[in-house]
Image (cartoon, rainbow, N blue to C red; front, side):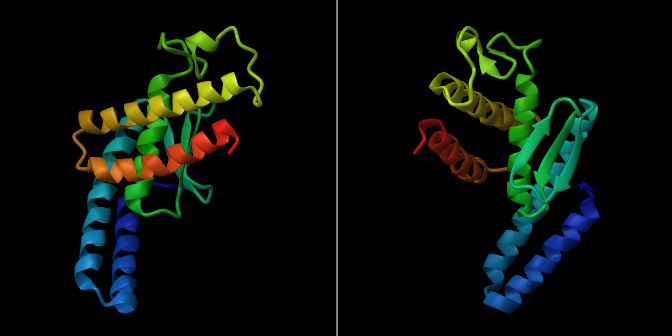
Length: 177
């Protein structure tokens, strides 16, 4: 596990930029990607500072995507993705943090929408899967709103590209297809 280090992220981005020019020879594309990385790295620093204020640690691991552990108050983000994707994963996990565990939010209690409170919550029950998918949609929504509140430079198109990819996998899991 690694902590966020802006200099290390910027150095990594520069090395990707150099490799990209050597491999592809398309300097304009490489510059655009490098610039997007730099903006995302700066934005990530702001989100991590927000997490620190909420007493939540952010670490980077080899695990895919991102995950929040409420017990340890820790968000884990993949170290293998480009900074833009890392930022979007981080915002999504912050969305889960904003939903909370039920004490603060009337709509979601313990990660499930209120209307499913009486339903048996087995992991195979469609009601359970639907509740999980609904929470995922809400976490994406709240993550995007947080990005606006923090004044991040992240573009909606960048956010939605990752969001759609993840929501597709949730929906496949939810429908069993």
